[in-house]
Image 1 (tube, one colour):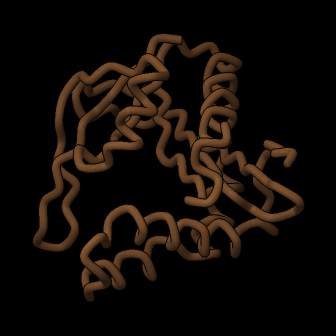
Image 2: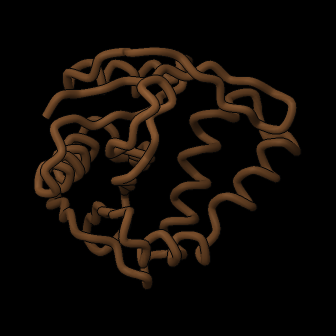
Image 3: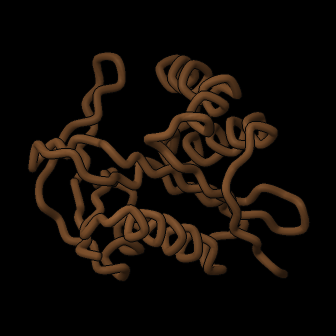
Length: 170
């Protein structure tokens, strides 16, 4: 099956929202759905929000398609302030791949495209945040030569979830 990586378009917004909800809940709602999770995904992952991000100059989104079906995406924020180094550098804000396509090179292709976009803008490193409990993602980023530089918490209402900040030299 051929995977195509391309820049996201406004017409992708609805599928980006649906895929985000699916991947986020699969990753974080391991014990089932709770109100806190539902409120988060239904407010965070909306088609309108994705349209805004696609049109924003400081971000770039790439999608992965297989037979005209969206199977993954990545979002780069070029002027993101690193919470550990406190300087603006590109951030891989999101890299989501539908579970059925994990292990097929989709994540690697999306990450490669995001890194190329950072290099094209003259950047020499990129950072990201990964949940400490997301072992598959953590191992993926380690294989891609990302290194831990610190830890931050993701606050979801009154809950705190430990996340590591990883960086890669380009």
